[in-house]
Image (tube, rainbow, N blue to C red):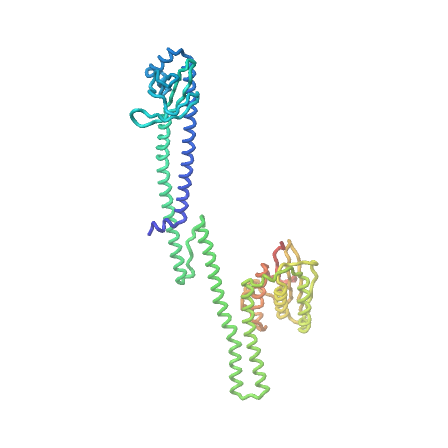
Length: 455
């Protein structure tokens, strides 16, 4: 079982590939050295044969024959492995080459010839046949035994060097693979605990010094994100149940009282109207939640285009200026940089701005002012909605952006607590930042929606 898992690990496979690469490099080096040794020995033999032939050719025929006969006791034996002096008909005159070598041509050029002795196996010689002035032929041969010994020594050296190297690399691969298997086993056990319901369990990531630990760290961050989302879903579910229970309970109680009291037509119609209002509030909460979910899934990016912010402000101003005037409040639109654009969905951005203006009108006292504006700074465009209403405490500015949150100052105002959550969802879809600050004079609230730099 361990060996099967071992061969499946990437570490062991990489080790085997490294070993194969090392073996290939060693074989290539061996082949190059082998070929170089042959070339060097061939060139050396040629020089020695030609040099000796040149010296012997300068001797008289009698002296040359004497030297060839006495070669076994002279220095010539150390350089020349075989020598022979033949007449023009290839008959032996003197020397240890008893017969003319098969295939040898007396052209004065070195040749590699296979020698077939009367006893024993054939062996190669490098031969040089030179025709002398007296028509005799001098044949000199040099053995390849030195080259064979060098090649044998090279093969033994390669084996001696390669075996420990390969064994050490293989052992190292097994050790590293065993370590990787143990780490993967720990991760599998952690994943099994997570799948069993322990959502607080995390993969062992240590200091994220290698790829496996970095991967484990990324998975842990993903699990943290999933845990936060699950907690958020649990809280949202509780908030939905809480916010829907109240209007539904009112609907049920009113309908029960109306059925039991036997009301006249006018009173019954009034009760039904109030019940419809409560049901509309429930439907509004559900619609807002579905809208936020749709935006968080980024399904609307296909409709993105260049949007001029001044046009957005003009449209929202025209829509809400009469409403603000009816409630005794003033809505202003400040001019900004001409032609300032962002990349986004026009209808969603109008919805974002309309939610902020609607909130500002709700929480601004009679006689107050709501201001729409825009600006450009460091290549970024920003929308601003400012009011001089009740304001938002600094410790609540992050909380009001979450779903269903309502501060104590807003309990008397109708709403579901989802308006700013919808604003955040639209801003997130546009990769924009939502920032809440106090108004310019220290009172009220200013919402900044900062869009990313246009590319």
